[in-house]
Amino acid sequence: MSTTTPQRVLLKLSGEALMGDDAFGINAEILGQTAQAVKDIVEKNIQVGLVVGGGNIFRGVNLSASGIERVTGDQMGMLATVMNGLALQDALKKIDVDARVMSALRIDGVCEHYSSRQAIQHLEAGKVVIFVAGTGNPLFTTDSAASLRAIEIQADLMIKATKVDGVYDADPVKNPNATKFTTLSYDETITRQLGVMDMTAVVLCREHNMPLQVLNMGKSGALLRAVMGQNEGTLIHA
Image 1 (cartoon, rainbow, N blue to C red):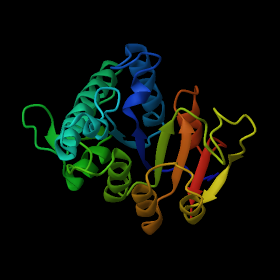
Image 2: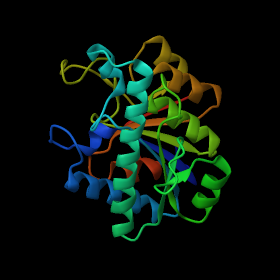
Image 3: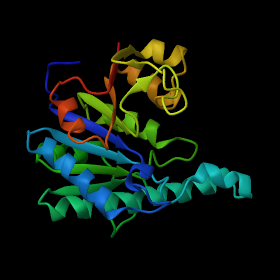
């Protein structure tokens, strides 16, 4: 793992991570724990951008099976990420962390429209910036949006928060003998199709030399340990 503390990180959080053990929606306890984990690294003077998915509310890709056009479904999914972003902003403000929601879709009166220049200004002022509505375009995942935003805000590290504590050579839920990787190269991740993120997201990281760390957000202190350079999860780099 890197021994250098990053100055600016981009955290990718799935919508499903906000459900906890609930079947759908936002679990208040998990929301609070997530906000506190972010505050812990903000207090280390690390600038934090956050991309959140919307799968706990709505998954556009699943609607195509029910007859709704894919583009329309994806647009609905983008709006779900806005709801999650607003909830995270509220949770952060309740624990005295200034946060801004920036949307790739213009939703005046609800949140700011995304601008990389303005986002960097917010980050430099110590605000957490929550990026919502994906890339603003259908057919792209929030994983791809996270890689794009990490590159645009010139982050030092991108962190993918999952429900497992890193990348394995097989599904650890199905295979108890699966082996966890401590480090991986981008090329190996792509060649072995390890399913860390969608391939577009990984390729973007590779092309722009964006280090990617995969960890279990539900593991107490995992996020803080990762940004402080301790052995946590799996680090993917050149």
